[in-house]
Amino acid sequence: MELTPSAHADTFARDHLPPADRWPHLTDLGYPDRLNCGTELLDATAERWGHDRPAFRDAAGAVWTYGELRERVNRIAHVLTDDLGVLPGHRVLLRGPTTPPLAACWLAVMKAGAVAVTVLAAQRPQELATICGLARVGHALCDVRVVDDLEAAEVPGLRITPYGGDGPDDLLRLAGAKPAAYEAVATASDDVALIAFTSGTTGRPKGCMHFHRDVLAIADTFSARVLRPTPDDVFAGSPPLGFTFGLGGLVIFPLRAGASAYLADWGGPERLLRDIARHRVSVLFTAPTAYRVMLPKLGAHDVSSLRRCVSAGENLPAATWREWEKATGLRIINGIGATELLHIFISAADEQVRPGTTGLPVPGFEARVVGADGRPVPDGTPGLLAVRGPTGCRYLADERQREYVRDGWNLTGDTYVRDADGYFSYVARADDMIISAGYNIAGPEVEDALLRHPDVAEAAVVGRPDAERGQVVVAHLVLRHGVPGDPETAAALREFTKAAIAPYKCPREIVFHDALPRTPTGKLQRFRLRGGGAGGPDHTP
Image 1 (cartoon, rainbow, N blue to C red):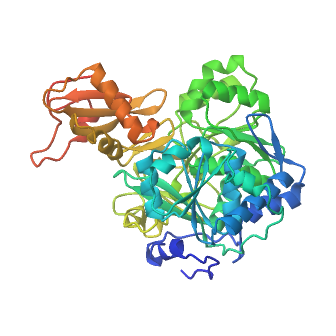
Image 2: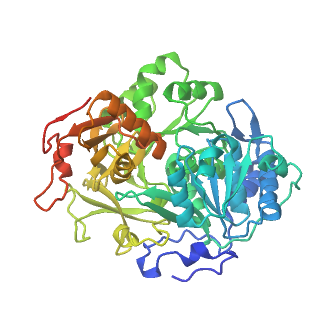
Image 3: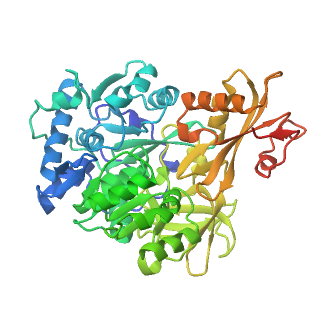
């Protein structure tokens, strides 16, 4: 595939794209060769709908209009290019709770022609160091409240600029002295705009590279054709901007539609219900777990402003869908997406919804269910979900590209069934990924963290079905000789793990064994752990 001449001075991202013959088939939506998604989302929308319309709202009640947001983004972009020396193509790490300043930083990186690497505020130093190393990140914009872990990562050559503080080098203070106008870099539509990291079943992060045109494509397919927002909508939800589910649902989709978004860090379902009432939220993005937890609390809160509820991140049970509709009159828009494809590619809304199914391919995408040989299987037969459309998997210098993309199709790692009417229904994950409350958790990564503790001799981490969270993380451990398998040891191991990896990845249950089940060749039999069996006495403290 021939690419448009790049505007990047630093060509690292394009140089590390997979070879063209390993790309998925990509649908052409007709975008021009030169395209900056930051300009399209912000400047073009402001001109179309008006500079005085609200764009972002925060937890303190402040409202940023499109005109104010554009000026703030432009001033930050000036700091990037004038003061920090960020060149087109440089990777810029973004880290912080969900706030308007974080979203403004992302837009500024887009307009400066750099590559955004947005991470979770909860990620620990070792995780951050790994991501920075893989993407060769040289600059970081970090909320002052979470700067300590980034500094502790000790990334060689990383220049960290804090924001939200009162220091002389604070990004927002520097931006205040800059011009309100900025000429965005004329990036190619196929210049890399962002690298989103996900963990595969090995636990080794994979960087998913997406172009400027991809950012608009998810808004012009799922959002425009299924969600169908209006300029008067107020978006809100639980996913952080470090997840592409959150980036799309809370920044890209509202800005593309001329709507506004309430941006605040996740404070639990109870606070989310209060926020819906206070800010008159009309479009909600969250995981099935949150919908289940909010159901019994609905009576105490005013959710009459809601008109669209989107669920993704894990399978949405039909019972949850029906209970939500009974309580609110709203039909949840279920969907499946992937970091590799940037956002949702199978979904259904309104009269097309069938409870218990994920839905139909989003207009612009194709999907099918295939066997191990890559050929479609008959309707009603479980198989691997294969998808293609305007976005697709392009891993950053990773041999696992061969596994995810086959014959032009993206294989998501999910087992699905398609019925005779073309509806797709989730069956299970086809790998060892644990999906808990919408978070993807790689068991081997948790095992690695546990094995760093001197008291742990062996570790195996699996998911256990859970009514509220979909799955919970369960760690099966063999301790060093003489170490007691008691509640104190379990508590100490949990605290140790929380210091090594993001807390949501830590095991909710720990089971101690004399030995883990293995084959005669020493291969771990995870299926026996999922089924509750083991190779010796076990107990949960």
